[in-house]
Image 1 (cartoon, helix red, strand yellow):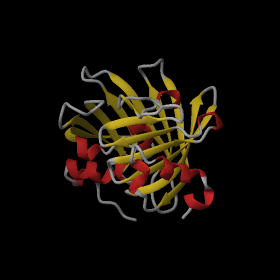
Image 2 (cartoon, rainbow, N blue to C red; image 1 turned 90 degrees about the vertical axis):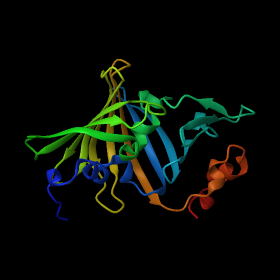
Image 3 (cartoon, rainbow, N blue to C red; image 1 turned 30 degrees about the horizontal axis):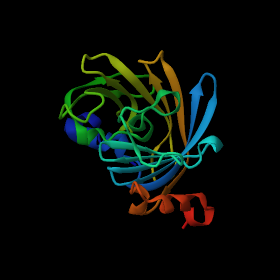
Image 4 (cartoon, helix red, strand yellow; image 1 turned 45 degrees about the vertical axis):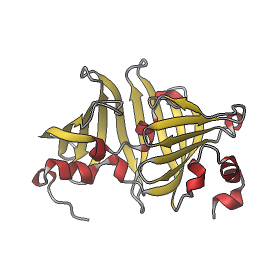
Length: 237
């Protein structure tokens, strides 16, 4: 595949083409392994996503079976077998090791941010383009600023530094490995939580299936639909 020079593109178009949140299919099921570094604590989750606004996280560790996170738009709920009602959580809720859902799944940057400045940087592995992004709206955005670095030749992201309103760096995400088959997605990333003593979380996508996802999975009262996920023959239909 031949790519046009990144700097030949309009900055906003470059952001759309390199947007980490747009690489994965719009509707999919994926299985992820999260490791806390350097200790190596290992956890597994399953992700079901439909479009940009509906996400279900299924916890796969034996002690957490039956526990789910459901995100609809900007709202996040925790569902557990012991709770009669869903518990609404702050969107900044962190998974194992300190990574938020957006950092694990890939935030749709082009939808929420605009490019304020961009520049070209030399690198031994090929030129980089750095985009300084600012949120289009103050509400509903966890990090108002992002420093987004892209490999010019491939137009794939290398890193994303999420910043607080003050400009202080909060989280750095490094994109280390990409899938070598379609669909293309960031297969392995490392999240560095600078606000919590630099906690490191490695996130690896070990399975990705592009598929239709039924709306019933995201309904807060659809317990029967989610229980079917525990039956392997139904999960693969």
